[in-house]
Image 1 (cartoon, rainbow, N blue to C red):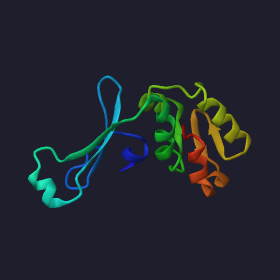
Image 2 (cartoon, rainbow, N blue to C red):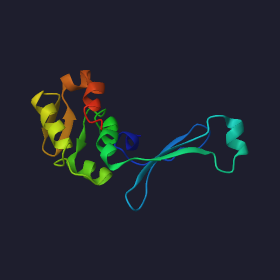
Image 3 (cartoon, rainbow, N blue to C red):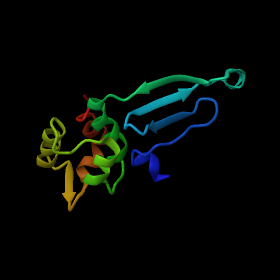
Length: 130
């Protein structure tokens, strides 16, 4: 399912399951449930951890998924999923550097890794780390 890779929400059900949820107010949370089935079945609330993704972490979180798509992502999908703009710093500076290094390319409103960028994808994504 492309929803995960496009930074969409997903709900994990069962022991060890992970979820990403965007609330109506725009706050994004990641959560996971206890891994052991016996603990999961015995618990009234099997969620072990619920972590809010801070605004400054959103570019990295988005790119962690979206840049793994060969087709990349659209400018609008970035804004829709993060509430941020690609013209905001420090994302703009990082994008400009990656375009100059020919690791990213833009066609119309779609940004995607180049063939060289795909070879260094982990390093490419890490550049968006807060």
